[in-house]
Each structure stands twice: as structure tokens, then as C-alpha cells.
Amino acid sequence: MRERSGPCGAQQVGTAGRGGAAGAGLAVLAAGLGTLCAALVALAAAEPPLPPPGEVVVWAADRDGARVHGLDRDLRLARRIAVDWPLDVEPAHDGGLWVLRSAAGTSSSTHRLDRFDAHGLLLTELWLEQGADLDVLGSGEEALVVERRSGAPTRLLRVRTEGSLFPVLERDALRCVLGERETAVVGAADGTLLRVHAQTGAVQASASLGGSLADLAPGPAVGEVWVLDDAGPARLLLLDAGLGVRWSVTLPRPAGHLAPVPGAERVWIASTSAPCAARYGPGGALEVERCGLPLPGLDRALAWREGALLAAGGAILRLDRAGELAPGQGGFELVVDLAPRARLR
Image (cartoon, rainbow, N blue to C red):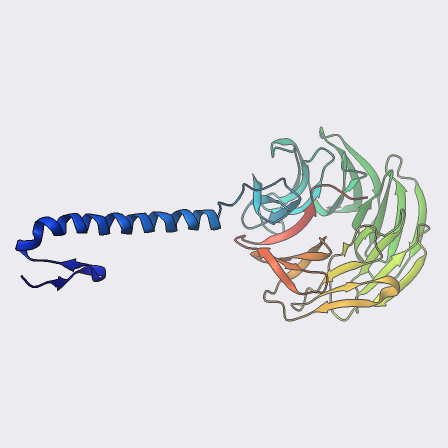
């Protein structure tokens, strides 16, 4: 009988050649399966499975997702901690973290201060009227909280891991705090800056900077302080250890927070009014400016591997040292804060 072409170009024969063709067909099938197996083995060798996530190096507070996420150095999810409406996170000395959170997710709701250990277990929870800012003393063994109270002056609180609470300072219009080794630097809405002893509350130094002080961060040298003033045209200031102004520069756009580069006279700032981020260097020089970022809603940032991480709604944008976009991370609901796992100061 005549031959006719089968699938993949194999030859099929009529009944008369069935016996010899069966062996040939099996041989072709075996050869095809061998080729397929070899291809699969080669593919598996070329693309090995991803290794498991590494240790947590960054904490990300996802307010609307009711989670604090621990990310490894490649920004992969390494830990997930259930926390209702987290607002502010700071690292603790043991690998755990402090979390300032809302009790009900509304602007009028009271706040809580939670302390988690390195495994994400809740150790302490304190009730606060409303927390304006959170930081830690030294390596994070104790927390510092600025608490706003109805009908009473704002106060600075020091909190231990087991939940002991100590009022440090009471003064109207306190807004932000920076923890040092044994002292706290506190900024107010009237432009006043105070350095106080964290145990006694004694004022050790003060400065009148004008404006309204929105955020503080550790400067490049011990005792130096980065200051953000958000009244009118925003200003960035670098203060010396005596709280004297080394230099200041007016910012082109509103901003809410600072992201200093540890040990360097450099700080990243994300605009709250435009998809822009910038890095300022020695003397207030504008070293990097990147606008046209793909996501709005910027505010919090974190200096990261010669670049920066930016909290951008449901994602974390990553910039390299030149301000170019690098692989970030998404899948969040609303990221409102970023913090390193360990404080580098």
C-alpha cells in the first residue's frame, strides 16, 4: 500500500507493512521522548529554583494591609506580622521592632504602641491618646514617643520593652523626636529644638530655628542632626553637635520625612506633592534629582545600598545611587513607613 504522512512528519504505512512499521514507530517515539527529557533536564539546569528568602533587613509598614512585612536584602518577603493599621515602625535591639499603630484606622482613633520580638510575637502593648512620632534610644532597647493629648500639653514618653512608661518632657506643640544614646532631640511646631536627657528630662541644649519642625534624623557625625522644616517653603538643615546651624537649603517641593545616608553628609528626600525624589550632599548641594517616578503618593524613604527605597502606595520603589529605577517590590495595600532591621548609629 501507499505511504501517508503522519504527525510530525513520521511515515505511516498500510496494513501490509504493519509488522515492520510498528518497531520503527516505537523507535521514533522513544527518540522523541528522549529528546524531550533531555530538553527538560537542560531547562531545569539553566533555571534553578529560587533560594528561600534571607534574613529580614527592612521592615515595611503596610497600613491598609494590616501587616508589617520583613523583607530580605533582595526585597523578598521573609516575614509577615499581623498588625492592625501600623503607622510607624522602628527597630529594636534584639531584632524585633516597635510599632506605633492606630486602634481603629480613623484620624480620630486612639493609638497603640506595640513591641514585637524577633519572631513577630507581641511582647507589650500600650494605649496612647495619639502618637505624633516614634523613635528609639541607642540600639532600640527603649522607645521614644511624642504623644498628643486633648486638653493637655504634648509630651515625650520613654517606654521599656516590658511596658514601663516614663514621661520625659511636657511642652506644647512637640512634633518629632530623634533618639540618641542617652539623650533625645525634640522638635516643635514653633521651630524650637531641644536636646534633653532621656532619663531626667533636663534640657541640655536648645535652638530656635523658626518654621515648623516636621522630622529629625541622625547626622553624619555623633551629635549632629538633620532637620526638616515644612512651614512655607520647606527647608533642610544640618546642625552641629551644639545644635548650631552648619548649613540650610530651601527645598523646591514640600516634604514630610528624611532618609539620611548613615555616616555620610547625604540625605534622601521624597516629595509629598510630586513623583520626585532627591539626594542632598555636602553643603546642601543637590546631587541627584529624579522626577517622573511611576507612582505618586511618596513620603517615607530609606537610604538603601547606595540608593534609596521609597514608600509609594502599594509598592516600594528602589532608586540606585544615580536616581535610576532598580527592581523594587509590589503587592502591598498602602506602605506608610520603612525602617532598617538594625539602627546604624
